[in-house]
Image (cartoon, rainbow, N blue to C red; front, top):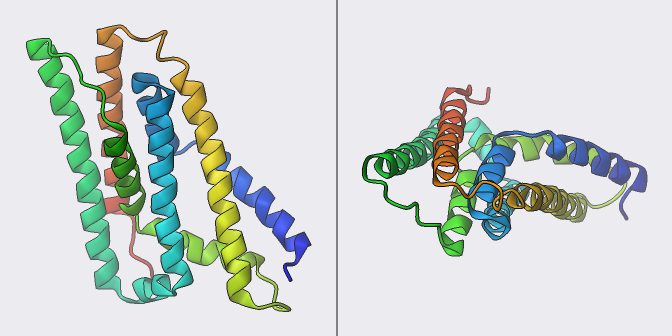
Length: 209
């Protein structure tokens, strides 16, 4: 039986944390404004799926192993940060090619956006450690732990999906206003900047312990 006082506190805390705009929201905003609501929603679906995979690893106890095995954390951090920097370079190159050759920027496919969302979410191993530290704070000692963690994890993911979808719908509505190629290309530069900042943040974060 879940402790509803703890559960409602968890819902409130999760909503506040997720509602604060961060790199993921910037990514959703840029992709939605550039390619429309559908693109933004597929990015959101990918990000949520990636977070779900991370939460699943937390429930399996692998986050504890990751926090103890410093070399493993560093390896994941390098891989994740490197992937984000690669995305930044790709975005900058696409924008530069558009300026040099006046090539139209082809919209990404839904599957491409989904995969990118998943990989961007998985690129930050710190998120897994956050869930490992955050979720247990709202677990009651009077009931089995694992079922409570599952309920909390699903609730967190649903809140994240709903709020991020609102961002996608809102910024996606701007696509009709900013269809001009110059603006679209500018968004590509902004997208590259977001990936660059995310990659630097992942690479420069300290290892646990």
